[in-house]
Image (cartoon, helix red, strand yellow):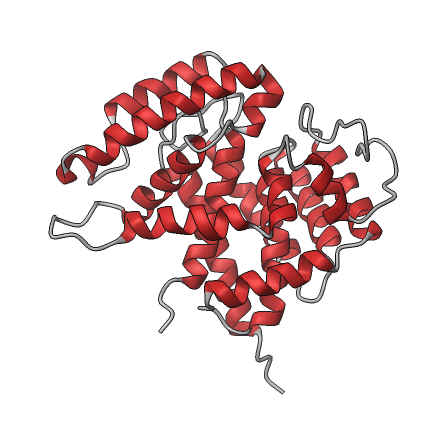
Length: 300
């Protein structure tokens, strides 16, 4: 009997790889890109990480925690450092929910409901596996908490553990609020950038959409990774600059926005990297949003 799920899985996998590729082909301030390495990493590591984590994230029928652990394990073996923990934590529940929605393209509403069902089923075993993944990835400061630290065995389910961290971590907040920031803020920013205009089409509309989503998140609230590394005051200052830069970029003549490359954003990118400031959580949220959008896009 033919595998009726082969086509949707392949489409979802392709959407994930495309989103991860756009993460590094799009020059985003403070992030590693093909144009600008940084923070001791380069774009090829991120592309290799996407390939390494792919099978684990889209392992049909597997629990979320196992997807997370396997994806991080394969990534660590491939590149030897933490390049994609945030992406993995975000995409694993989204991919698991696709097991229940049928063939992409799917409606955002149906996918969102399926994500809610997946999150409601997360248990202590999912937490145990995810804790192992976080400890293996070894991201500085992530998982340190007065309650349910990843350095001790969990006693509650993964969603409940994420709720405890949701006030200080934007990725944990997605588990608590049903991925509302992606389905509401992220998709709105994506489709805003993707609307047809009378002006000539951008050279790469995917990069324009990625940059718009990234700046929307970075300008929306302090980036969790920056908060962990540098404190809330500095993270808030980056958020304020992001809002100003985003407003300037959006108000520029359409011809000036035909490429994601922008001299002022490029200068800010260099400044952030010189100060070791990496808005990594905003990038993770943007990648997950692009994955969502590419699966939802084109629905008839």
